Length: 439
Image (cartoon, rainbow, N blue to C red; front, side):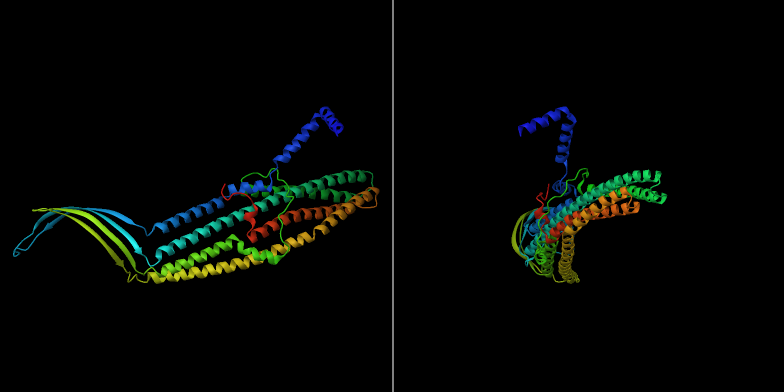
């Protein structure tokens, strides 16, 4: 073994560029962006996630408002006034004159009974906050899935571009050989024209593939905020059960469905709260004040008062009835949203599951097709060189090989997307990606 190492060192010294290339390749491998790196970037960059986080903060503030809405209220009331009094001449003890007064009063009010409105208001706010948390989780899951889609799309378009370039290289070789054969009269001008047309088409395919890759890279940047210069291949996929019923049973964990259920609970509590808008309120009130009136004889007084005040709304011109009707509609909408989400998740899971199974079942068949097309291409080229196959036969065989290779590339990346789509539809995608919710 030491002998092999020493030999490698001597070769590296003799050919220093070999050492440089090995270091360069190692560096490129280390610097390749992985799918987890892309997740981390998109979860920091996605603007919709920040909006969802702000929505959670807003609901937290609303809960604080609901908690403090019916607390102790303390008011300091001051007053300056001027009063002119005139009395009829037939009054025995006239009190007419001018009076200037000033008063200062400290008033305390505390609701000791709100007919349950205070606790219901807090419950509404809590359910709304829980719904916003689930909306954030759903947005995070959507961001992760979008990252997978753009990541695999770049890998797919890159692989297709490389296939087009490889095909173009073969076509140029075929063109060189066909030109030589044409010069010596072994093929006709029509055969040469076929090759030229195929080369032109190959160049157009490269241009189109490059354009498609550029678009995919732009979409990748839009999701992640980083460029897709060097993406690592996805070599391992999360495991998915082969039982579709097991997958369907896990849809109850989907954050969008949990969000809808919290919204329904909030609507039900809001309905109960609205029904109690016209119920009585009992306030404990207390006043402490001083008053001074400047008249001909002057007066000054202090006052203290502690009491209980009952407030019973009697008429609001139908506003409460309108509020109750709206609350009932909100409950119906929430119920319908839950039903629609359940049906949608059921349909999407069945469709995605069927597509995934089709791809996995066709893997072996597609690989066999590639092997057969590769062998056919090798032997067709040999027969073409011997003159037993035409230019058209060679080009047709090469196109078949390109088609199955392209299909394999597409299927590989589609399999990744379908697996992550199922995880998203099951509500497990957030747990799978170990990146903090808030960076």
